[in-house]
Each structure stands twice: as C-alpha cells, then as structure tokens.
Length: 475
Image (cartoon, rainbow, N blue to C red; front, top):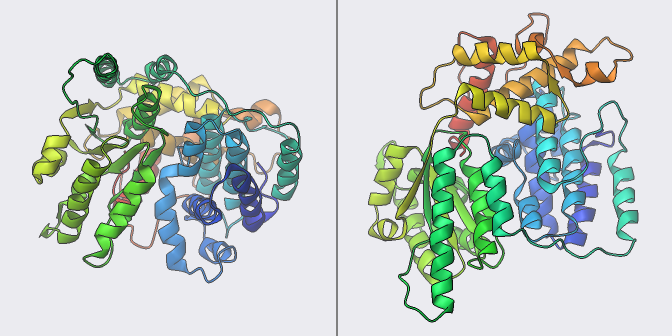
C-alpha cells in the first residue's frame, strides 16, 4: 500500500474500476469515502482532510460516514461482495483499489498508530475476499494514479470471462474451514439438505411443504454471523433459490427515516437493493423497542419489511441477527415475523484456542507473523478479559491485531533499513502499551472512557464502546 497520491486520487482510481464493473459512481464513491472515514476517525484533523475529497463535506458528514464504514474494517465492502457473488472479472481490481483507499486513509490528519493498524487489516480483508494480490511487505507499491494506469492497461488485454459461480459443495467447504462454529455448521448443512430435497421434489412434480428460508442468527458480537450470512447467500444462489446471491448488510439507521411515512419508502428501497440475495439486518430488535418503549418509526419499518418479504418471497432471503433474548422479543413483536422466521441458529462464543487461530489468520492475511511469545502474550490478555455479553470475540482479536500493527510501526520508526522479518514479525512487546508511544485510543465525540485491567483489553474495549454508541454492535 502506498496512498502516496492521497484520498482524492485513490477514490478516482477506484471509480475507474467501478465504471468498468458497471457500478454506479455515487455508490462506489460513497463506499470509498465511508471506508476511509472509518479507518481514520481517530486521527486528529482527519475530518478536515477528508472533507477536501467531499465537496461541501462537514465534520458531521465525516463521522456519519465512519459509522457506515466500520463494518468494512474487517470484511469486504458491499460493492465488492456483490462483484464476488456475480463472478465479476473486476473483483480483484476493485479490491486492490479499495486497498489503495485504505492506504490513503493513513494520510488524513495526523494518523495515530491505530489508523495504520486499521488500514492494514481492512486492506487485507478486501484483497483476501477477492483473491487479489497480497500486500507486498517491504516493497513500494505504485501510487493510486499509477495503479489506475496499471489496471486500465490490464483491461485493454482480451477480456476474461466471468468466473464460474461456486458450487454448493465449494461453499460448504468454505463454511467448514471457518474457525469454531460447530453448531452453526451442522445447522447450515441441515438447512441445505432440506432445501435441496424440497427443490428436487418440486422439480419432480411432487407435493412439498413450503419451507421458510429466512433465518434468525443469535449470539454475542464478533461470532461470525455476517461471515456465515455471506456464505448462506452464495449457497442459496448455488441451489437456485436466489438469482444473484449478494449480501446487503444494514442496521436500524439504514431502514428508519426521520419522519413517519418516509420510513416505509426507505425500507422498501433497501429491500429492493437486496432482491436476488440476502438482506442481513444487524441488531434487528432495535426496530421494535427503544429505551423509552415502543418505537413507531421502527414498527413502520417492520411492517414494511413483512410486506416486502411476502411480495418478494420468491427471490429474497432475510436474516435478522442480535443478542438471544432481545431477538426473541423482536420476533414475537409482529405476527408476520413469527410466521416467517422459524429457524434460529445460535452462535457461541469462541474459545481461547479458536480466538488465537482467528488472530493468527488475520495476521497472515495482512502479511504479518506473530512470533510464539506474542501468541503467549495474547493468551494472557484473553485470560484477563471478562467474557460477558459485551465481549467482542473475533472483533476483539481484530482490535488487538490493529493495535499491535500500530505499535509495530512505532517500534520500527527509527530503523532505517528494517529486514523483511522485522517488517513482518509482531513481537510480544507489540501487544503491550509503551508509555513512550503516542496515544492510540480511538474515540469519537460521544465516547466515554472505558477502564480495563490490561492495556490491550482497554484499547479493544474502547473501540467496541464507540461502535456501540454510534450504531450498535455488529454481527
């Protein structure tokens, strides 16, 4: 990654790829700016620099964009997900352009070490999802403008056909390769078997009961709900139950408008964008009740959702997710929901061994290596961390890695010519606070300080608290 040309140039390069892929310019631009804001929100002065790439952009626009983009810090963006689902030949180029946007985020304001870690992990997530080139450690990548020229030149070569869609077996194999989630894997395999037989019976002219395809995912944050939802969307497409197989991930803020009457239109538009794939609604219970009781805006969204699910039942699957108890109340709040969501899949917390595997996998995807002493230090951190309902699971591991990458960069700040091993290796010291390092805590204007016994735990929990306040925990 380089980001040498800054955010405007990186966004311009991404729009070049988006145009070839048939992606609307405004959609791609909004996604890129949201990703950059989410990565740079802890950097002093970042809102002003970000605003230079957004005509008329304000500080509030910056933080609103950051809220929308946080879910892409560790997962492929919405457009990239759709390009992957459709087998677009531009998916790798788009992922590389997103990686350049992530790199450019490091030039906004006065970046903290947290921003460096955020950008490294986010870029790796985009590249890995699309099967694109990995980050070249120790190399000096081209600037965004040069990158645009490279991918344009590649495009001038004979066009390759779109990649063949993955089979059910291939997607189930990807599911089985995920760390942990034994109960989830069994239930998804069972669902696939039932739906496959139902489809075969229908094709054979036999009577078959109508089986609802909509799902409820319950579990604590960071337990892989979004990842599994993305695989389910591909599996349903491979079974011939969905026409596209894309995943559209939303929360309350993307369904509810500021006035009664507008919410129905906004919700209907979101559902329309998900037709052919899966609509994934995170923290869905926030639609039916707030801190002060019943929420008429959220209920309007639910009523519209139920109607849209019925009207589009042949080419739409809805997955709702959240904590177990609130989700029970949510499903019971509307008879239409209770009749459509009959299958609940529980996501359990990860064990220490599983979280260590997740951390290792995230590091490898970003082309880093955790030395054995660093892994032992991470286990010490886990042993000192409470596993209550606010524990971030996989997101906790990601936050720890992001902080470690930042400390790693700070540790090498005076090394003129570091070796490849030095550039790659995360040491135990990178998982602990050094009083000489600059402040790395990622906070927003609404965030309250969080106390924890261990410095890495504190840093991870502070990021999680900010996300809770802004938009609720992500799946």
